Amino acid sequence: MRVLIVAGVTGGHIYPGIAVANEIKKRDKNAVIEFVGVKGCLEDRIVPMEGYKVNHIKASGFEKYSLRLKAKAFFEIFSGVSDALKIIKQFSPDIVVGMGSFITASVIWASRLKHIPSIVHEQNEYPGRAIKAVAKFTDVIAVSFDDTKKYFDEKTRKKIVTTGNPVRKEFEAYTKEIARKTLKIKDNEKVILCLGGSLGAKNINSAALGMAKKFAGNKDIKIILITGRKQYAEVCESIDLNLYKNIEILPYSDDMPVLLNACDLVVCRGGATTLFENMTTATPGIYIPYPYASNDHQTKNIEYIVSSGGGVMIADKDLNEETLYCAAAEIILNDEKRKAMSKSAKAAGAEDALDKIYNEILLLTKSK
Image (cartoon, rainbow, N blue to C red; front, top):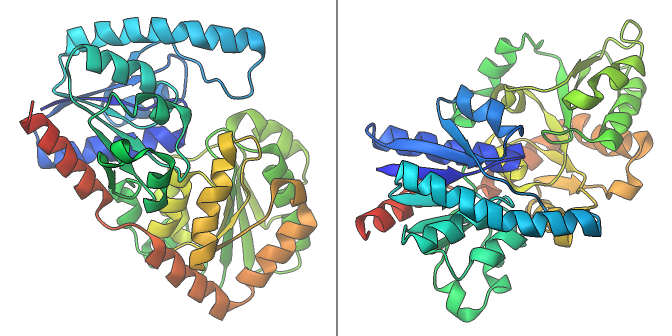
């Protein structure tokens, strides 16, 4: 089986793509898998670490762009299709798997022109532009949330299958005890992990620093803050780490499976990949939706986990050190509540997402 996976730019798209790739290799040791991404983006570092080649196309997103940049993004669609056609000719895939970022459309359109079967995955509850753009041209649409179906017409719904969001097996490889021993966390310590996604989030960083200062009197509470590489130096300069020893600051981490299993509470954005990783590790969350997400899709994602009892939400405009501290204290200092949220988070997660996606891929390749 030769598989071309389209996943790039952010970890929220790349890591589910890697999860799918690893599952295919696990089931079919002779499978040949390559990725498609954008040159110079996160996939160029992460994907080769997993042992896969990255091919590049030209592509830009439309969100938050000026008219000039929107025009550039529009014309790059044609360049992207041309690049994708060359990659498909060279690699000769049996199937193309699109993970939903803005680069997905060009490659799926190219695969259609070459009569290559394809499946796309929409991580978020509200489907993005790329998935909507290729809905009529792909063979199967896998979705994380059953409610996503309502955003498509009746004909398209027939090709939709609810799978959940694929999560790397590494997140299931740790018990809490092993993860905490790996990080040398003391038995009496309670850990709050704060992060703003693969690129970081300035307001989450600022609120987390303020929260750490408010928790400084409680020696049993430790804060781990992942700032994003570009903001790391600025964040470190804004707090005296010799004075506030209850916070550990990291620019980035490739060890999210162990971190999430070890922590007692996570403060994060509301991307679907983040949610499903938290649910897999049974981690209660304080979720701050990215305010500029298209169609406010992160709020819709978060409403799912909040309604399940596995998390709480703070609007980005309401986030500050006081609101974050109060929300965190209510959970981290209440063992009974935290355990109940953990149980609810785990129960809300999807089972066998990778198995379901692999079976769809297998069916499409056999029908080729």
